[in-house]
Image (cartoon, rainbow, N blue to C red):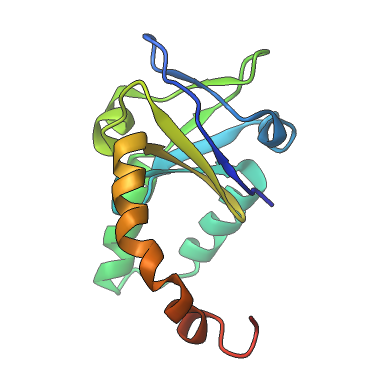
Length: 143
């Protein structure tokens, strides 16, 4: 499980240092791909395998499923962190997420998300006020 908010910087080569607390789970490799709201999703390999299997069983006759799979897999890049815990974010993914020097890396349960710092602050300012009201819809009776 990935938790917390971290503030790494993207270097001139497009590398990002993963938060220390995430490194063990991602050390064997990871997949980075386009996420929703113009962030990037980072999945450990076992979670990526689970997602792949789920999409494999979806009917190809459903247009939205085909389109979602195309975007997800076409933009995916498998990466192996180096000894310092850095990953290279491919140029097309940096462009998609509008990543500049200042980034925000958040733990999002089974995945990690990478955001441009300004985009994260903007999203959070818009979404956080409704947080209290979301619980009934998203987790009725659980929280």
